[in-house]
Image: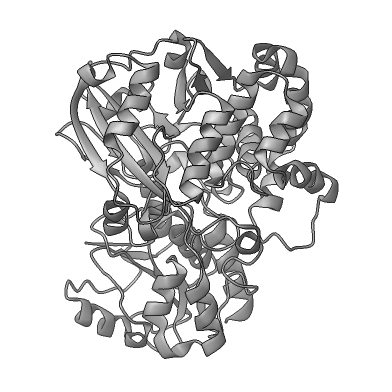
Length: 498
């Protein structure tokens, strides 16, 4: 499938070889760029280049654009499930996406009454409220401390997002704000929670948010995801896009086409050598894929740095078609778009430690989203969907379905009776549906201190070839649907090109 504005003379060839040869002759006038991969970062890079006057072609291997931001009928007809991302705090709070007319192109953000619920073993739930003052009131003795940490970060979110969604090593425009974020972010989550919070419920709440980092909770930087996402919850919320993640992807594609760009789907690129030598390439791919498609064009030491880049843990995901809403013990869970299932901080830490040790956890920390409580377009009338995953070692072959469902049943007894159908995505399945998800890694690489600073190398987005740039979640800006990796990569490419 080719989507194209009439002003852009792109050719549609379904045969890969013909397509690549044909690409040599398109955009004969002016600067020409090829973007490989149509995830949010690839589309962001393409939009920046098109805004600068480049003729842009996007090549996507899958039948639909979006990478991990797609919505698909994974179970039974009429039920629409998000293949990857479902909640979009960083998309709603993205400096680049905020500059685009997303609403004009069909994006409608839905904000559940509460961003997050964290049920506990006693049948109650700790709630993360969107308003920081409401959150402080709900968290009791820890409320003032929570507000003092996250309130100032939320108030300064636009400036903070610009600082943290770029290379770690940069000249800060807001150094005191960055320090206010960076000092707690670098702390291990177990130290952070014990230092700042008194109540077990607050510690569990923050531990679950921190676990989005895929790091063991006693590791440096394991608080980073918790600090960033907690601040985002109060600044921009944790919304979902009406109709699913595909709505955001389609809007980005529509903006690109309006700017004269083209999108080729079912168009895998196996070698850059099939394109004209002076083509500018922005690659929304993993370091391993970049190595595979660039071959001899990169210097040996750079090839080695790509080869040395380590993937992070994997995800094991189950999508459910349900006959009714989730039967939570704690009714407050029905107010939240996202529910974290892990019990105490110590239980979550044990689950994440097992993953770090190469083991599939017996009682996994489960991240669950329940979109149809707030978006009725995603399932037939009266029916519902749920989206759930847990962390596993990279490339794990252990079937986690029973363990995930046991954890859900713990907090929502009778859940299994509601299941109409399920779709299981092992790490191998995730990678087969999106080649960037190496071994099920949805974060773009291990979030170690070294790889956070050098993602994937000191070059950040550039490579040893002046015409080849990498713009995936494996670059600074890191994982998440925010497009800032693509934005920054394209800006760097423009500075170095015509």
